[in-house]
Amino acid sequence: MTQMVSENTRNDNILDLFLTTNLTFVDKVNIIPGISDHDITSTIVNARPNILKQKPRIVPRYRKANWDDFKQFMNTTKSDILKGSDSLSVEQIWLRFTDAIKRDTDH
Image 1 (cartoon, helix red, strand yellow):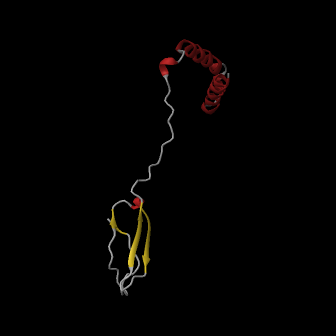
Image 2 (tube, rainbow, N blue to C red; image 1 turned 30 degrees about the horizontal axis):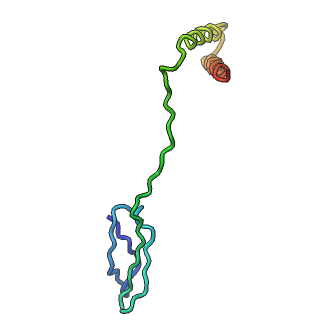
Image 3 (cartoon, rainbow, N blue to C red; image 1 turned 135 degrees about the vertical axis):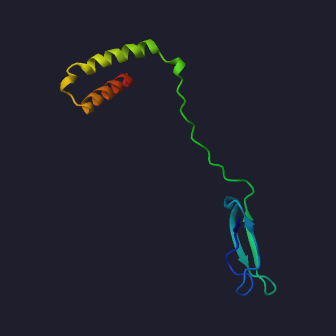
Protein backbone atom coordinates (compact mmCIF):
# COMPACT_ATOMS: atom_id res chain seq x y z
CA MET A 1 0.00 0.00 0.00
CA THR A 2 1.20 3.48 -0.82
CA GLN A 3 0.27 6.71 0.92
CA MET A 4 -0.63 9.21 -1.81
CA VAL A 5 -0.79 12.37 0.35
CA SER A 6 2.77 13.64 0.72
CA GLU A 7 2.19 17.29 1.75
CA ASN A 8 1.26 18.59 5.19
CA THR A 9 -2.47 19.18 5.72
CA ARG A 10 -2.30 20.71 9.23
CA ASN A 11 0.81 22.62 10.31
CA ASP A 12 3.68 20.09 10.06
CA ASN A 13 1.45 17.00 10.05
CA ILE A 14 -0.20 14.89 7.39
CA LEU A 15 -3.68 14.21 8.74
CA ASP A 16 -5.36 12.91 5.60
CA LEU A 17 -4.75 9.36 4.47
CA PHE A 18 -5.27 8.15 0.96
CA LEU A 19 -3.85 4.66 0.49
CA THR A 20 -3.81 2.64 -2.70
CA THR A 21 -2.31 -0.59 -3.95
CA ASN A 22 -2.48 0.43 -7.61
CA LEU A 23 -0.74 3.72 -8.42
CA THR A 24 -2.08 3.79 -11.98
CA PHE A 25 -5.58 4.58 -10.69
CA VAL A 26 -4.52 7.89 -9.10
CA ASP A 27 -4.09 10.73 -11.58
CA LYS A 28 -3.51 13.66 -9.21
CA VAL A 29 -3.45 14.53 -5.48
CA ASN A 30 -3.82 18.21 -4.48
CA ILE A 31 -3.90 19.96 -1.13
CA ILE A 32 -6.53 22.74 -1.09
CA PRO A 33 -6.67 25.40 1.66
CA GLY A 34 -9.59 24.65 3.98
CA ILE A 35 -11.91 26.86 6.00
CA SER A 36 -10.41 25.86 9.37
CA ASP A 37 -6.82 25.08 10.40
CA HIS A 38 -6.93 21.84 8.42
CA ASP A 39 -6.30 21.76 4.65
CA ILE A 40 -8.36 19.46 2.41
CA THR A 41 -6.99 16.71 0.20
CA SER A 42 -8.41 16.63 -3.33
CA THR A 43 -7.78 13.47 -5.32
CA ILE A 44 -8.53 12.67 -8.95
CA VAL A 45 -8.98 8.94 -9.36
CA ASN A 46 -9.32 7.14 -12.66
CA ALA A 47 -11.56 4.12 -12.00
CA ARG A 48 -10.47 2.35 -15.17
CA PRO A 49 -7.01 0.81 -15.19
CA ASN A 50 -4.59 1.72 -17.95
CA ILE A 51 -4.45 -1.31 -20.23
CA LEU A 52 -1.48 -1.65 -22.51
CA LYS A 53 -2.49 -3.19 -25.81
CA GLN A 54 -0.04 -5.75 -27.05
CA LYS A 55 1.16 -5.79 -30.59
CA PRO A 56 -0.28 -8.75 -32.51
CA ARG A 57 2.22 -11.57 -32.74
CA ILE A 58 3.11 -13.44 -35.89
CA VAL A 59 2.00 -17.07 -35.84
CA PRO A 60 3.54 -19.11 -38.65
CA ARG A 61 1.22 -21.60 -40.34
CA TYR A 62 3.53 -24.52 -41.00
CA ARG A 63 0.81 -26.77 -42.41
CA LYS A 64 0.39 -24.37 -45.34
CA ALA A 65 4.09 -24.60 -46.26
CA ASN A 66 5.16 -26.35 -49.44
CA TRP A 67 7.44 -28.90 -47.82
CA ASP A 68 8.44 -30.65 -51.07
CA ASP A 69 9.81 -27.38 -52.50
CA PHE A 70 11.50 -26.64 -49.19
CA LYS A 71 13.26 -30.04 -49.17
CA GLN A 72 14.37 -29.53 -52.77
CA PHE A 73 15.66 -26.03 -51.93
CA MET A 74 17.58 -27.32 -48.89
CA ASN A 75 19.19 -30.17 -50.88
CA THR A 76 20.23 -27.78 -53.65
CA THR A 77 21.53 -25.27 -51.12
CA LYS A 78 23.47 -27.97 -49.29
CA SER A 79 25.25 -29.08 -52.42
CA ASP A 80 25.99 -25.46 -53.42
CA ILE A 81 27.43 -24.70 -50.00
CA LEU A 82 29.54 -27.83 -49.78
CA LYS A 83 31.24 -27.22 -53.16
CA GLY A 84 34.77 -26.27 -52.19
CA SER A 85 33.90 -26.05 -48.51
CA ASP A 86 37.12 -27.86 -47.47
CA SER A 87 39.00 -24.55 -47.60
CA LEU A 88 36.21 -22.44 -46.06
CA SER A 89 35.81 -21.45 -42.42
CA VAL A 90 32.63 -22.09 -40.49
CA GLU A 91 31.79 -18.39 -40.74
CA GLN A 92 32.09 -18.44 -44.54
CA ILE A 93 29.87 -21.55 -44.77
CA TRP A 94 27.31 -19.85 -42.52
CA LEU A 95 27.36 -16.73 -44.74
CA ARG A 96 26.77 -18.87 -47.82
CA PHE A 97 23.81 -20.53 -46.10
CA THR A 98 22.21 -17.28 -44.94
CA ASP A 99 22.77 -15.65 -48.35
CA ALA A 100 21.03 -18.58 -50.07
CA ILE A 101 18.03 -18.29 -47.73
CA LYS A 102 17.83 -14.51 -48.24
CA ARG A 103 17.96 -14.95 -52.03
CA ASP A 104 15.19 -17.55 -51.91
CA THR A 105 12.90 -15.47 -49.69
CA ASP A 106 13.31 -12.43 -51.96
CA HIS A 107 11.68 -14.33 -54.85
